[in-house]
Structures are given as structure tokens and as C-alpha cells.
Length: 203
Image 1 (cartoon, helix red, strand yellow):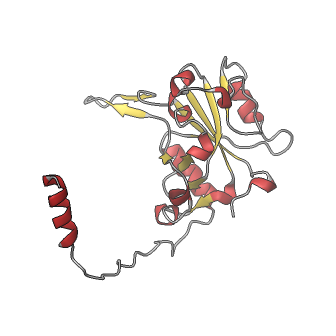
Image 2 (image 1 turned 90 degrees about the vertical axis):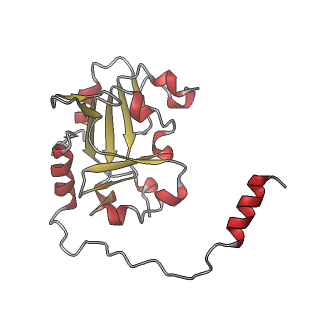
């Protein structure tokens, strides 16, 4: 047995045997906003994101189609929008470095912070949410939770291999306070509220 094994065995043998229940953490949801969608929209804007208001009639995806109309390379992981870079054919994340627009669907969103949660199930290849120049996120309004306390109780944190909150586009500022978007990730993040297909709803 090595010294390392001796040390680990000693630690295990001397772990405290105390059964202490975790403290109760409130959900801080006693004063919810009148509309989770409106609160999400306001906080998304505050963090530099773009909320795409759906048209009152006609093609609900028109705001997305307008954004990607002149793009050379579009990678989509959603059935609603067809791209010209097939995510299933991506062999390595570096193959996404030339993507102009990525279109994905969020697992859910957080009204309090204007964040969307993207998991490996949503992205297929995690790098698509970071290497694309611009990110467009489809979001079912029914998938908005009030705050992070509710967010952390979602099953995505237990069932998925990867999950990350995205709050607006990538941004950094130097010591003179000059803000630059896209320094370490996408230059813009846009969100379109659109319901999931009935068979794809999260229960």
C-alpha cells in the first residue's frame, strides 16, 4: 500500500459520523412578477441580449429568417429552422469556427436574470454556442422560471452531462471601461419566444 493509499484510508476512517440535515433554503418567490415573459425580456435587454418580438400574424419565425437571410453559414439544432451546416456531421468543435449564426432551443430560461440554459441535449455539440458569431435561441414561454432558486431544482442539472447559463452575448471590458462584445464567445444573443411542438414539451 502506498503513502497515498494510507492517507486516503486514514481520512475515510476518520470522517465525522454526524447526521446533520441541510438547512432549508426558501425559493424567494413570494412576490412574483405579473408576467415571467415580460420580466425575462426586460432582464435580457439589461444584459445586452435581443428579444425578438414575434409577429402578430403570419410566419412566427420571420424575425429569425430575417436575421439569417444574408448569413453564409447557419448551423441549426432545431427542426423549425434549416441550416446549411449539419450539426450531425460535425466531427470536432473546431469545425464550427466559421459559423455565422447558430439556432438552438433553450431547456428553460430564468426571468430574474434574463438567462437561458443550454445543455448538451440542446446544442448537440457544446462548442456551437461559443464558436458561432451570433446565437439565436428559441424559448417556450412555458419554460421560464421565476429565479435561480427554481432553476437549480430543474432536472437538467441531474440528467444532462453539461448545462450552462447564457446571459446575453459574450462581453469584456478593459480598465478604461470599453465594453467589447464577442471577445470570448458570441457577438449577439437573440431570443424568440415560440412554443415547443406538442410532442417535445418538457413535463
